[in-house]
Image (tube, rainbow, N blue to C red; front, side):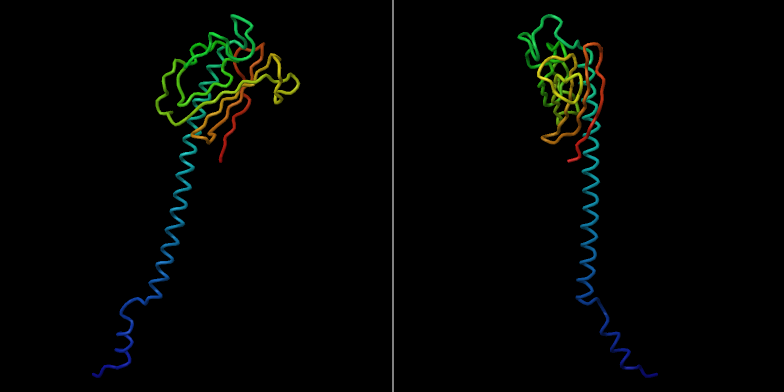
Length: 185
């Protein structure tokens, strides 16, 4: 039996992949790798943000609860707005009324006695306390109105993780939390 020469010729020519086939397959695999790494990276960033938000909300709520236990104004004197002479120091243990927390910033987040909270070393809490008008609690007032807006802001680095806003009135004992917002930036 004779072999057909053109069949042998075709089979010898197609013994591997051409350079074009290799280049196209490399391009396809590379594109798929970039796409999958982009999805994995976005997923990981989302997990980290959500973890920080949950941890931030926990320490914001703890701070808001701590502030809610205190009287609206200093029981010992009519010292005005903010810290009195005996209320300053490296810890919050001397803070005895709501307006003492105005401008408080602790980084890393600490207990009232100044001990760093385990697992929260990357988070920072900043507290804002403002007088608000009786007609519109969203408007800041320059003088005492009997209503304070307490805002606890939690940050990681310079990025805001969460913001908790509550209101205290002279007739209430405890803080009413009105809103919680999250920054997605």
